[in-house]
Image (cartoon, rainbow, N blue to C red; front, side, top):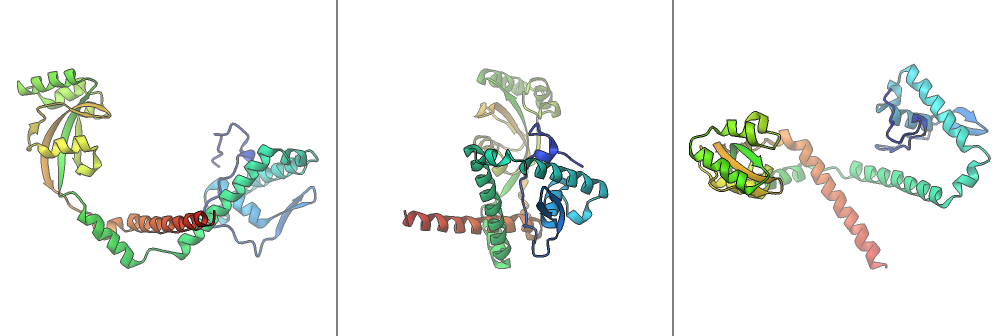
Length: 266
């Protein structure tokens, strides 16, 4: 079982980030009792799923035993006489309040998404809008990234004299593509920062930039190797991504409505 050690505390005491649909409690039954406090099946299953990252009914017997011991330890600690004084600490109360609100907010958001799915018409409209702004071309390019304008100018001079672009990239480029001769493969202009895309778009196939191109990463010398018409993705290939985006936008509208209503009352 994968135990989260990021907190530096034993796995049993790592705070839970509960996501997904809350487990139904209508048929919850007491599984065990610790210091007269009942621990029901909904709590056990929720904790188990958070630890093994899959449905509770898929847990192995070993995983279930580990989780039961962790939960027992949690309840043993929180039912000690000293627990109440700790719970009254302002910082602890604030943490409990925030975690409680976060879980409830997550559940409410999940309920909104479940009851407001993107319709086929909305998905199609969003896809068509995306296609309207999709770039017309794709480019195949290489680049050499260096720290100074002077270094970039020197490389351009070497290229003008017939030097091999890929060899210069392997020798001088500080970017991650340097070992591959600066090869960026095929890309659409919207995948690159604006200054880089504008420079590539202005070149002819087979030409390199006559002047260094500055971005937030440094100074670039760019070779546009080839270009082709952009092949937009089919609706089916991006349906899930678009569906998620439409639903996120719906939720954002809902949240903005709540904010506006709150603001009008205060």
